[in-house]
Length: 286
Image (cartoon, rainbow, N blue to C red; front, side, top):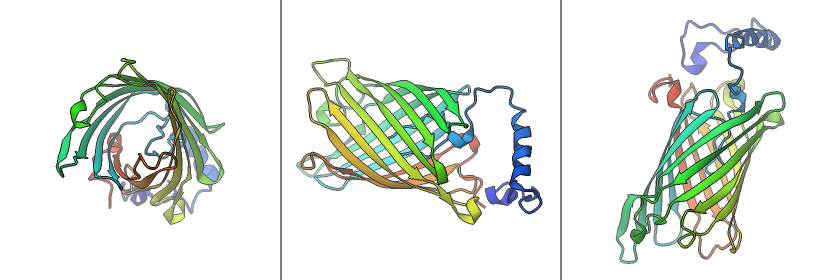
């Protein structure tokens, strides 16, 4: 409405009203358009905060994400994960995570294959634009589909209940939290682990706030196995929108262990995100 159709690679006949209407008048028009939705359960889009690498969002999505992590020390490990997310109704989402792993062996060869596949569901039970908050909870089951003998899987099923919370902060900033438990179905084969992940960042955009959006943020990761020692990591990162419609995004970052550094390697991280509900990944670029 403010800049016209071309700012989002939409119809060039859609005029720009930024110089003809005040911001208050445009908000009145948008408020009228929103009355056409008769279902108040839909969370407002302003609560769809930027995606972090490890801190899951409370907002339900229709997305496909390809994530890659490369170990920066050690003999070598590359983790690729294809994430498919689909929303059902206003507030429920299912998720499928398929890891494709490559682990270097001492002999200079690589073990490659599918890792442990995760199937999850989450439901947004609270959202309010007035308070700028959104909250959700859900469950993920990680199946032992990877070969344990090759270092590609745990060899047992893991059940993961979790909860997420997001908060809009002043000046384009945001805060997100994600906590839960990883509970093995075979207590003799695995250990229950608790985790809390927190991400804080800020979004700013070019072209008077209507162009390409940049979202630098940092995550702080905490995990502690039962009867074990705590593990802390920090993950500085930045997300940038690529397409004009902002339905294709790229993020890069580095996961840096703070504790137990002798046993855990830093990782270079990258993902490409496609919000497939908005259209083809090849559209909305010009």
